[in-house]
Amino acid sequence: MKYERIHTFPVKDEQKKQIQTEFAKQIVFSPHSHTPSIVCGIDLAYQSDQAAAIIVIMNHQSKEILEIVSHCETVNEPYIPGMLAFRELPLILKAWEKLAIEPEVVFFDGNGMLHPRRMGIATHASFFLQKPTIGIAKTYLLGEHEELGGNQGDYQLIRDHQEVIGAIVRTQTNVKPVYVSIGNYITLEDAIRLSLEQVGNISRIPEIVRQADIYSRKILREHRGDEEV
Image (cartoon, rainbow, N blue to C red; front, top):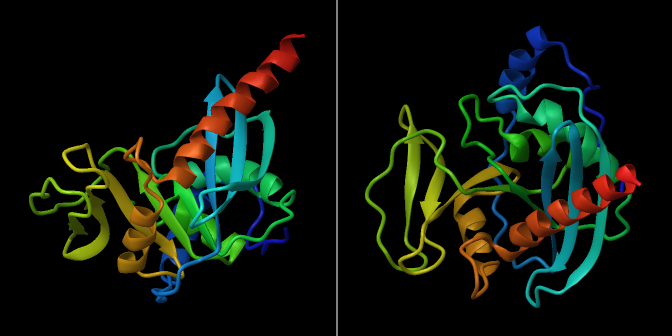
């Protein structure tokens, strides 16, 4: 699958914030009211300096997995809070090139606009992938919200300096919530709706993200096993 090469890697540290600030100005809030046929989930797993990027392609309604691609390599880019995309995107893009089935919407295990500069991995990646992207996070990063109800489907908007940057969403009744934010080319309302449509019966995590997480750890274990042989 092709993607737009909007900048090269690695990126010098002094240029990273500038890139994030410039691209944050280009985020598009575009309605995606129809139900997609094909979605994908992206996640990375790490062990020491080894990482595996995984992309799972799924039928949105049936949850049938249609394709899985991955890319494993040594990661030299250090972890810097708020700069995760510069570390992970090179691997994600190499996995993306292996895709045969084109998704309509891309879910990330991570944040989109729920980020100090509104440029989490789901947002940054969107400019390369040119697809509607959604960030699904398991932990609270920043912002303020009203008290969340306990029923499935309840949500509250998360604001940072009065700007809506995401939502805390109860995906299962009386179970810990998740944090949904748009990456790009979609509205928060549609991102929440599609995320809830992806929730199954056994987890609070949308199934497309849960499967990406499962396979990223599985493939990394297999990759590490091959190296040890």
